[in-house]
Length: 288
Image (cartoon, rainbow, N blue to C red; front, side):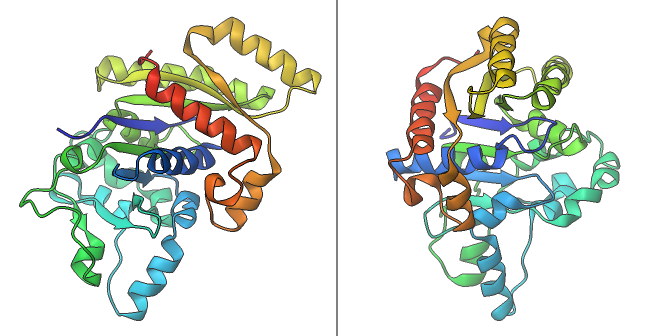
């Protein structure tokens, strides 16, 4: 088996840089070792990660050549009998794109026998190599059966900002969960519910799921609220906190506007340094 980890980035509060973190962790891992195969799965109906990875250009290319496109919503609707549609972007990252249809997919999931394990079941099916199927690109694998665990080193899942069936599916399929947290009361309020959801999934559905840790993002401790929040997190969740913090940096927003990861856009900025340090910590720390 090739697969090292399946990491879900989850927080039921929006605006905490989940998508930013998935994008830059994936890019940073590939930057360290270009031979890695990293699959990003976008489970957020807004599809921001898909957009950052080049999905709009890919859709345009497919439609111009009159080819059909499939998303993660198409795969989830039929669970056991379906396949994850995998695309590759110019930088070498693989991804399964989101679509607005995810916003009303819960009824489709509930109709399936194990509604919170549909994504996990898809990992047991061979993938649908979309670029090879329609565009003549090099095949991801030439084996008859192409399972996620045999094809990829890492799977990173960007969750929607809600404790929905989609988030539970991410936790049901993952080996670990990372909770990005911003230093502010609203972001912190959701941590307890997120950790409780993790514990429930681990107890009832996915015994292999581990808490990889809480990651402080967009950190700016010049304000009293941020300092107090930081102290609260350390007092309450210290054993589950990553040491690395991603400092607030204007270059992050600029890079996303340009649809670039932070390492390509501003490799010397503080955010690039912090994400690189976080990746080192992620690779060297034991699962918590």
